[in-house]
Length: 105
Image 1 (cartoon, helix red, strand yellow):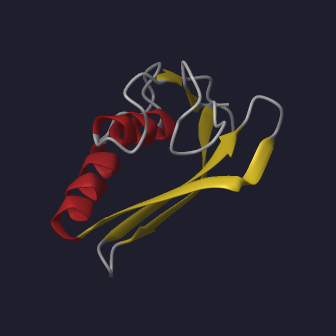
Image 2 (cartoon, rainbow, N blue to C red; image 1 turned 90 degrees about the horizontal axis):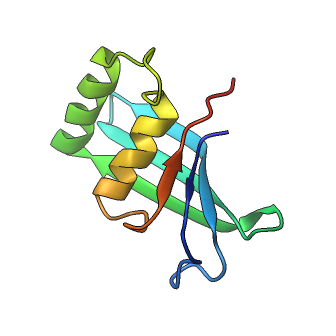
């Protein structure tokens, strides 16, 4: 499973040590990309720990084009990995997190 692992629990999300993508919505018509993340507290994946990030307008269209033309077949370059890295770059995930890439269906 691909995830963003944190060196220490996030202060803003009490006890979350890991994030994974739970849902991804891409709407071309509305020019929106929404990513829903679920958090792990070290014991279990819990629905109460969640985060939602939405990109809209020109930013969403640019990201859609990048995803549509990306070569996702190379190691460490899966769709989930690219999304998690983008969320980290944009400050939606802690800067000290490590993106773990073990793709699965």
